[in-house]
Image 1 (cartoon, rainbow, N blue to C red):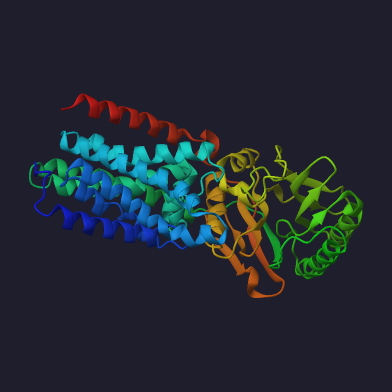
Image 2 (image 1 turned 45 degrees about the vertical axis):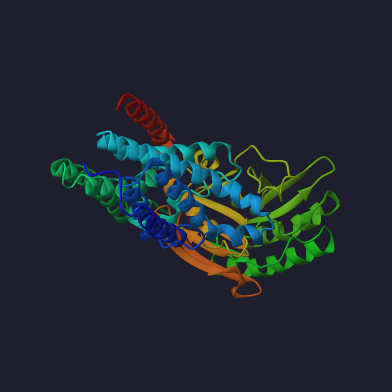
Length: 474
């Protein structure tokens, strides 16, 4: 094998650091350039196989921290202290460094096939366990950098984001091992590279075939409307804004909208103003025959809820309480615990609110209930309109439903269950931005919806095997 020592470790370490940090900085984050992520870890992995273990760990950890600076301004705009940035990025830097060390150790101990799966297994284990306890769920997963790469995105229907994360790290790991073994074991080098390329090719073929199969119908015309206004206080201000939204929704209904989605937290509803607020939108629903979904802060004497209120023709108002809150801004709200399903001739529709779509759990339950269309009021922060606004798209691919998401300070977005954005408009494109689009509303069965996090558990087992393999080899 080639020597793990280099005559120019500082220069090579600096070059590896700069290359991987730059690729991750621009390839991941708020406005990702998706092809860059596929090769981002490669320079650090190449350096790790030529350096000492302290040098490999230092370069890997610092690289991840430097790449994470692409979130610095975002967290500052949210009003969070610098320590919050370190709390978000720091654990990933530590895990990346440890994963690189495990990869390095296995390659240098003549276990290249185990090394191949060790790096992606370590990272997926980290992201999965973080998702179980983190208040932001799956947000931050590398897989979200690939939302525009539609053939690869279809992998989410099999494994959720976990399989996508795995393959994103499998390919650079294979290239690094193949390059390292090219002289000492050329046949094994070719086999490892062929295995990784074959896995990627198989998934892309699957994705192309899935994209070519039409989503089940029927088609539903949806309308979305949003204005970049903060939550109105209870009383006249909320009633006035609700009426303004109703005026815009009336035009969408006249254009054939069967379902109309308004943003999250339009205004505040208290017990004295509940009937008057409901009357505005309930009357419109009954007059037009459209279903209207609107988000409000619902305050009672006992509790406060971030609530979606659903108005259907000649029916009682239905409500959905947001399950996952954005800390620290929404901690005063009581989380909801129940789904809201609407059954009609065009199929089953589900209701969720903004951050609920960052988590696999609620969406999987809606998928198992055969929801074909999700209606989602939301509120983004302008700077994250692409990143956070599009996270929901993966939920649709993984769990088999289309999504109509109306976000103030973000996008009005309609996507199908293949991840295609069928129509989109910025919420700041007009005082009241509107969008009318036709979307398939039939449900598609997916393996991920049926089996859940099966791949994550498989990967955890593979990581355990890799660690045992490393400990047993000298």
